[in-house]
Image: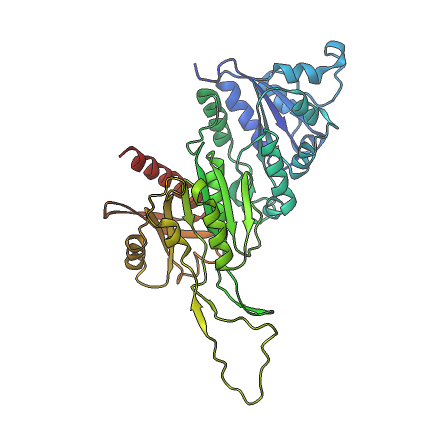
Length: 417
């Protein structure tokens, strides 16, 4: 017997092409010994017939709010009390919005309000819809309301787009459910830990309309923040100007300049266990930014700018301290280089007194700045002994999860020494 034997699972299915995967999930759950009942929205029935789920589960499929065959016609209350776990797969953007606002206009949303069982949502939608600020706001609201969100997968979508938003494969969803019942909750190895992560570029003003900056998109830092939150950490993301939504379960702070980023990081130092400096901070800024737009002069072929060095945020955070009220966090740096990548990364690791550093070659246009993919090398050090591990090219979301898991393992190992 498996850990799902006789567990009572309510499978919610909302409208979307990914609804076909739910039929495979239902079959896996039944084979594992679970009792499965299915609730379908009208949109779901446009993609998969209720008879399919009835044949797979051996139980009638529920589609209406008031059930004339149920006790007192209140079938939704009976189902809400019956379930050990509710999993909604797929969860559309529309359903997320309605759940976030507490609506109860159909059977599925009513069940979610009426039940005391844990509810896990598996979002599935177009990648642009998933990234939209309204959807990301709803993910944060749902997390605060006690829903558990299963991260969407990346890849090619039915519409032809490529990106995050795919419903995970049925086997992955099954493993998620099995893990929940085996451990009493989905594994969250970062629970109780506090992360501060920087992301994106900084912008250093030259005058009111111009600035110094770089090509960082912020995607790697945002992926790290999302992964840490998924693993149970409390995450503060300090971001320069980017066109990305704050991930679900992450607290965000927006800054512009290196000085502002330093202030935001130092204000978090005493409450941070793990600090990850993924932002591409400008090394220099204008000594005296002009109050008005710098005008081109007809007789002036050159413009000389005086630049001064910006504060080193990572070095400041990594400084050793004896102050018990302001301890040094576990510090991780990033080295985005165009040559001698490993040499420069290891030098930075030792010179700045870091615990780990992630190196990547940004001279390769297929990865790094602006790309959805990356390929990195993780260096860790303990007492001047450096360990190297190369991670193969993959999506930044996938690499973010791998890096957080490896950094967590190394952090916990250091704590036990």
